Length: 421
Image 1 (cartoon, helix red, strand yellow):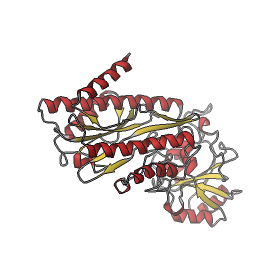
Image 2 (image 1 turned 90 degrees about the vertical axis):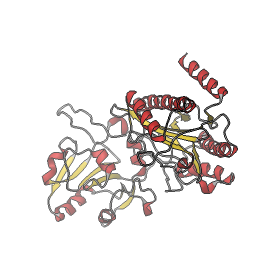
Image 3 (image 1 turned 180 degrees about the vertical axis):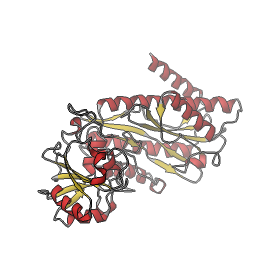
Image 4 (image 1 turned 135 degrees about the vertical axis):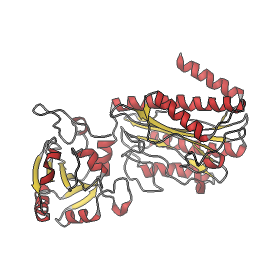
């Protein structure tokens, strides 16, 4: 979640770098003296998201947040861009030449032995590895140990507030409304023999989300059969397929409210255009559903697991079923104001996320199996609370929905009536 401006009694829009509600626990259990944030021409979006300089910056800046008092921020800034940082409370020093910058770094880091930066050893966590190696070398040359800021990033930018959680729940409800409506449209149009394609349905779903006040960075994925076997397939004018009887249909949709600080929700459901799901599809979905549920169960039993550990739990279930080669992506991703957020990802496969799942973390759990002729994926969102994990996106899908099965339609209608009551 983006750091927010705090009003100051003496000047409009003057703020401390770390919002007061974010300061408690920021450095807990971390063996580090300070957090050093630096950016040059938007190479480090994490620093830009925390510091929020005004206007256009073209020179490197350095900002240090000490562990002992996060309000005692110090800034090293280029003279020509001093006005870009006048809204930030802190002790400031200015440089113009590289020699002055070197002296300024010594001032900035005086008394610091170990500093956190947007660095990841061997690039293990590329989402955090944002500072160039040369800058890390300069800091180390001053006799300072550099460690990863990964947990600081998670706690500052992805630890959800009650307001953020409430917005996420509303987004999740809107997504489910659209998902249900999309399945209903498939039923109607296919039965009426009206032409319906992946791209047409995707645009229709996007319009429905927009009508509910939702925003998103891309239109929903609608993928049938072999297209569903390509995890990031997205229909458009050049990649589109008609939807008809006998097709497997995968819907992946994500959105958030338009208001500042709103949190995304992200779900995936799978349906079959017929009254009986083929056994091969059903077996594949049963495997990923079991793997998904194993992650939530592990969260209930194990305090503070890492993202990599949870990915291993999910992947272990799928390997045991003999389908490990068909699961070709991480288990899940952080969710905050971005659909792929700044917190812990459920990943020990594509990367190694050693961050622990702490209360306030929100993430997807979305295993999938992908083949040449079809693919299946199930996706839920999980919020870690002080009392344990909570699935925030409703009852997880247990089996592929047979869209022409009368019993299925009646059951879903009854569930919607009960929800309205």
